[in-house]
Length: 191
Image 1: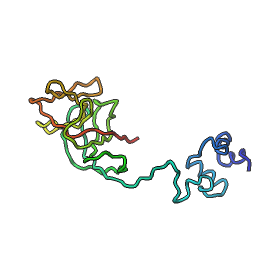
Image 2: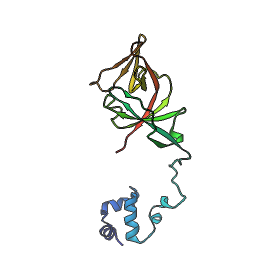
Image 3: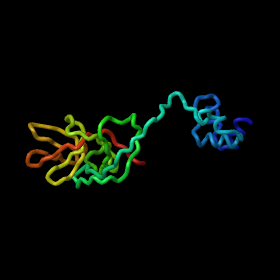
Image 4: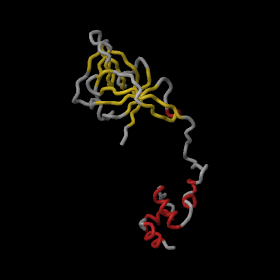
């Protein structure tokens, strides 16, 4: 079968097929399925990586999964009531996680944009303090409300700084006490 005939049978352009045969590019799984049907061969005959039990040299296997609780929503704007109800568990490869107690919070609001988008899940490591300029989950202790902000300290006053310039900082001092719950490590977002 010529490349042109294979192209007509699969709908894959001849130029794309030429790249596969010259090993300049690698077909994706959908293309491999089309080729295996057209040629009446197994998918692993086209791409040996699909043989059960085989793995490419550049793949690092996941050896252990950890389930991290999603505790609820945290404000990225005005503080909201901190409700520590586990909504779900998020599975993560254990090798990619920092040490310590971890939990996720769902970001709500736009004060940390563009750094943390509204609706993203933010991984927090439980710790009582963070360095200046790090992002932390902070509990406003008077009203048990939590927010997610960048920390800045000046003369004994802690400023909870938004990344979005359209929002004002929140001042945490003896008149408005606050407690750092943990450090924001990273966020994930669903498409």
